[in-house]
Image: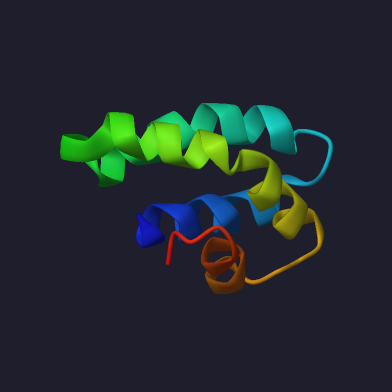
Length: 74
C-alpha cells in the first residue's frame, strides 16, 4: 500500500487546502481500485483510517514518503 499512499499524498499536494478533504474521499477509492484491485477493500479501509493524519501531513508539506511512513504504510 506504500505506492498507493504516496500517490494519494502527491495528488493531494496539488489540490490545495480548500478541496483536500473531498478530494481524499474520492481518490482513496479510485487509487485503491486502480493500483491494488485484488486488495481494494483492505486498501480503502486502511487509507480511510489514516485520512486525517495524511491530510495534516499534506497540509504541513511533508514528503509523500514521510507522510506514509508516519501512518505505517511504507
